Length: 522
Ligand code: AMP
Ligand code: ZN
Image (cartoon, rainbow, N blue to C red; front, side, top):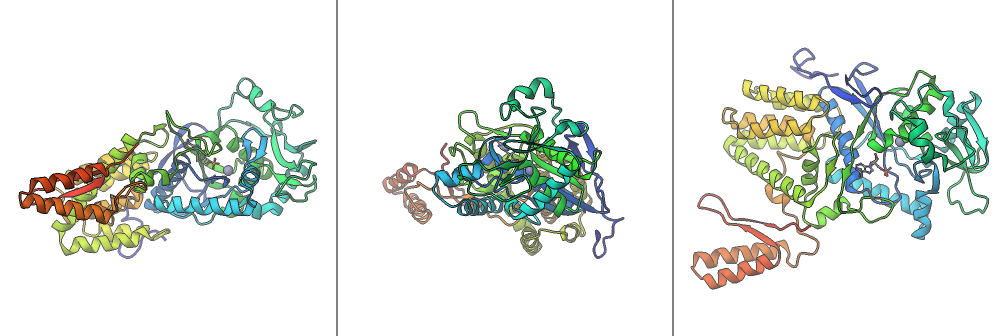
């Protein structure tokens, strides 16, 4: 259970975690439904294309939530689904199936498409230090269970059939739309009626869609309502309730899900579990990343991926830090300048950590090892790691941890948490080893590899750089030698070549070595 070794529950300081619940638009203290378990479901990607850097914000938010809960001693089970069928080009139940459309236009099999983008999604999560979920269930692997779930709704009178398939009758549940604070009549009537004018309510949605008669569907299954495929919303009800074992604690997703996908999931859950049971206690949504002058739509295929940043020389963890600078419930404007500034900040933090490690000597190196272990930790050993770090920590360090705890436990206040980190880095009253311990504790939540990343790891060669890193090292060394020999011509030549190649050189001093980095382009 929670405490380990010398640290039991009483000794361990836990901060109540307050979270914003979209259901009643209030901050609530998180209280698990069962004991110490926090069961969290996150709506995952529709795998018809790569995730863009905006999509990744939704998973970073879920990761921060999960880490914060683990950090506070909860046993977290986190499930992220993979949508590989049924998500139409419009959330409002119209258009083509995104995955099928991609398979047809790329002349690939559906399987190849979904495998390719699922695996790319996992790569992105790993690069961003987003801890793996306990499982990633796929819709296509749950079709029979989905059919069973729909049959229950059907038997209980929550459905009706139209020529396109089986629909959920939202008038049969109480408070439909409460989650999105939907002003149904005025806001959505126009938008959602277009899909099927015969629907009883414009906001009713498909549970099962029939295949078109022309035989063009690639993925289809027999069902009591005819050959077809499940609607998008029903997979999440089925898989969340299955893998989290009934009504669960927290459901997360991007803010757009608050309006359509999640109200529909909730209505299905009410039909299945009982009208007063929405399925999840707390519904949490992260705001969008906005790109003013750039496209940010996954469906157009013209968007920024994490690899677009890496190709320009940005380390993925600099992007992680960039996102932490805003609260998850605020929109973030993407700009390369801001991402570059985050990279500079991360480098500054890492240099300061390196200085602290040098100052702390052998003990500092020991902590870095512990941190390597932390990096591979996914589950309950947070308590163990925290107690290792906190062992023998002085009062100033303990106070810093309390401040950090207040920040992250207050609706995941990452900007405030970063401010606490920065004050620890400049606080002369905290001994070096204690500062490192505190940073180790913070990094269990931040996941920025603060004790293990070398500042030089941030030097990422842009994909189109004309020189290799080794060439740059050689030129920088040649310039240094030429300067030492007062051969100004040769030193200038080397500098010109470096500048042309987009390399920035920061000249050192007697005590600080010369460093260089790639200039990051927009
Ligand atoms: P999708 O793969 O399209 O189903 O979207 C995956 C996740 O990304 C969902 O939680 C969306 O709400 C979220 N999302 C979509 N666009 C953005 C954006 N621009 N910024 C942040 N999150 C987004
Ligand atoms: Zn979902």
